[in-house]
Length: 627
Image (cartoon, rainbow, N blue to C red; front, side):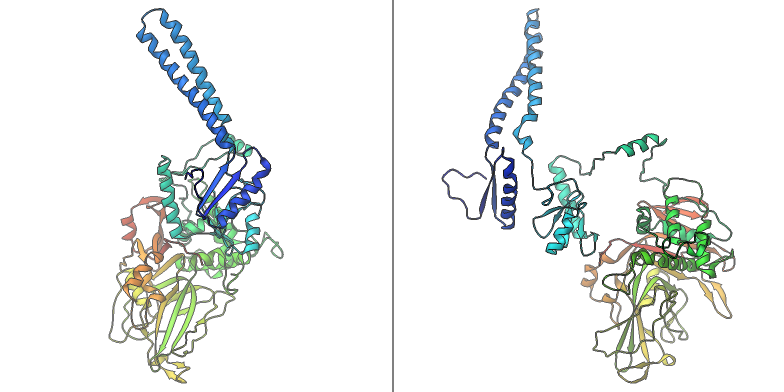
C-alpha cells in the first residue's frame, strides 16, 4: 500500500521503523511489531530506513549486468551466422567471454543483495531468540516459544494459554491434555490452505521434509547390507504363527491385535515403560513377575521387522497361561475368551505405568482402556410410575445373541468383573424427574444380554444391524423379575433398555455361535452379514428414547460421521463345537485383505471377508475424538 508524501495517515495504521544497519535496534523493532499486532492495527507498515536505497542501487547494477550478459551471449552466437569469414572469430570470442564474465558477476552479486540479509525475525522464540528448537506459536496471543527448551510451557504456566501450534508440522498441542490433539475441522482447513499455497508456488501439493542424517545415522546406513522401501503393496507386518498345539485361537487374536492401528502405533513408538522391573518385581525367573506388555511389545517388533519367516509365540502363550490359569493347557480354547483374558492381563500390567485419569480417579488411562473401553448404559423403567434407573458399565466387547428371541424370559444383562473390581449392584429406581445416574466402577469385561421380547414374538437376526437392534431395544423383564422401585416403594414390573453411552476407539462384536446348556451343546452356523463400514449412531444413548429407536433424522445426520467404524479384522470358526479351527482376516494398508491360517498367509478380497461366517468382528473408529 503506497501513501503519498503529505497524505493524511489512517488512524488504524502503525509505522514501524527498522534501522537496517543497527543491530541494537532489532529488539525495539520486534517490541513495536508485537505491540501493533496485539493492538490489532488494520495497517502495519514496516519501513526499513536504508534497505530501500541499497536495494535500488543493487537492482540498477544487477539489471545492467543481466542485460550485458544476454546481449553479449546473443552476439556471440549470431556473429558466425551473419559474418561468414575469419573476422567473425574476433567478434564472437570477446562477446562470449564478456557474456560469461557478466553472468558470473551477476550470479555472485546475489550474495551481496541487501534483501538476503533482511530476514523475517518474527518466527523465533521470544525468550531465547532461537528458531531450531521445535518452535510453537500460541493460539491465544502473539507469542513464539521453544518446545524443546520449555519456553512455550513457561508461557502457558504464566498466562494459562492452553493451545499452541507446531510451526514445523501444523500440529496443535493442548497443555491441559499434555498431548497433541486432533480436530477434523482444523485439519480440513490446514489441508485446504496447504493446497492453495502449493498451487500458488507451483508445487504439486505433496509435502517433502528434508532430512539431514547425523554421523551415527550415516554410519548405520553404510553398514546396512540392504535398503528397504515400504510401498503400498508391502507385506511388512504380515507374519505367520506356529500352531503350538490347538493354539489357533491365540494366533487369530494375535493377528487381530497386531493389526490394530492404534495399538501398533503405541508399541512401535516404545511408549511402554515397565514398572514391574522396579521395586518388588525383581525376579526374572518367576513368570508371574514378568510383564505381558513387554512381551507383546516384542511380538510387535517381530511382526514389523520385515522378516517373513514364521514366528513362534511360545513365551507369550506361557505368560497368558501363568496369569489366566483357566486357559492353561493344549486343549482347544475359545478365541473370545482368550481375547478378554489377554486384554485383562495387559490392562493389569500396564495400569501401574499410566495411572488414573486426572478428571476421574476411578478411570484407568492405560492404552487398553483408551482403545477398547466403551460405556454401556442400562435404563430400567418402572411400569407403574415410569421412574428410570440409569447405570453405566464399562465394556471391552459386545456379545450378541443369534438365536430366536421368542419364548420364555431369561435373566437380565450381566457382566463379569475383572479381578479386584466390584460387581455392579442391583439398581434401584430413581425419581422419573431426576437427572442423576449411578455409574458402575467395575472393570470392563464381556457384557451380554439374554433379555427376550414379549411372549409370542420371535425373530432371528440376519445381519449385524439386526443383532444390534435387538441388543438395544427395550425388553420386558416379566413378573418373575420384579425390582423394588424407590418411588413406588414396592416391587414392580419393569422394562430394560441397553444403549451405547460411550463408544470405544476399537469396537469388538462377539457373535454368540456356541450354545451351552444342561441338555444342549451346539454351534449356530447361520450366516450373519456384516458391513465394511458401520454406523453406530442409531444405538447411542443420545439418539434413542425409552419408547423408540431413534431421535430426529437431523440429529442423526449431524453426528453421522462421528460414530462411523471401518472393519479391519474378522475371526472365523470353522467346523463343529468339539472339532473346530480358527482363522482370521486382517486388513493391511488401505483395503488389502489377507487370510491368516496359523503359519499360512494368503491374499483375500473384501468379498471373501464379508461372505465369511464371522465370530469376532473388529471395527476401528474412523474419526478419533479427544476428551
